[in-house]
Length: 76
Image 1 (tube, helix red, strand yellow):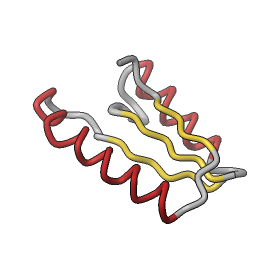
Image 2 (tube, rainbow, N blue to C red):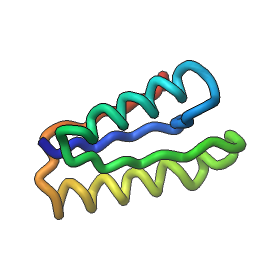
Image 3 (tube, one colour):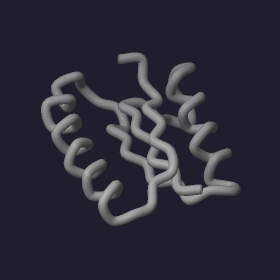
Image 4 (tube, rainbow, N blue to C red):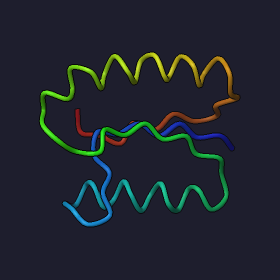
């Protein structure tokens, strides 16, 4: 299965949601092809470039790959 995983927060050591997303991606990669789009932390000002970047990358992956599942791992 091809999974597109989108999240603003993914970290091995920081916060509950971040660690959850990190472990979920790691677990999914064991049996699936996982494409990740993550912001990697930083200021909320990074959202100004992150969301347009995600829209363009999503379109690219949906056109060029056979994506079976899109997971948005965020609270917003």
